[in-house]
Image (tube, helix red, strand yellow):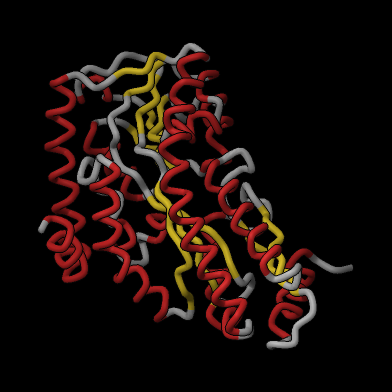
Length: 324
């Protein structure tokens, strides 16, 4: 009997077996997020454009919501050639190298203009890291700014004491610690179940993530604090890429640039729509109090300094380029 891994290996083998005179090639593409998420919708459009542009010779089979490979294993799967292409949350790789958490310094880049400058400052370092490991970046799109979803009023950091706060990375766990909460690391598909079982009673998540997890079933307040805007990236195995002809490579590169531009634009529209959706479900949309805002600012400065120390020369270069 064929296992999932053996079938996957066979599919990838087909993708790599031919060069310029290839017939139809299918690439499996795992992503951590559900079909309803704007990142996944953007990827589907990206894949459709490539299929159309190649006349069906290159097609992606998208596997959303961790259905093929679990999120923490996705980057390794691309690196080893288990799959040729995938999407991942960049900051999930911060345990490997601190530079991958460039986007996870709270309140460092709150506006879209600031977030674009931070990405331009960081991109060369991300590209260099990936290239050294046999992978290439295709495009990156950030999430809308993260909010804090709670079951109660939060007027200051003191109100976080004892709150079981869902986090999704080491960086957001550190934020929870400094805020005085009890951080609990939970992957996106398990958030609703974690709320139901009492593992968490608040979460750091974008409004899009709030809709994905139907946070109105578990929380009552959303603090639009614009904590961070973490990036997702779509990247490819270089060996798989090298098997494509030049025309196909150019088409993918063009489609990737279009997907990045579209993703940045759509996230703004999605954020407004998702906030409206959450409000319609009874969630109170609030801005942090002046006291909490000031406390958050100090927390953000501390975390940025910690990150810069870990990231070393790369971190210094990013902050210098961003702040000039």
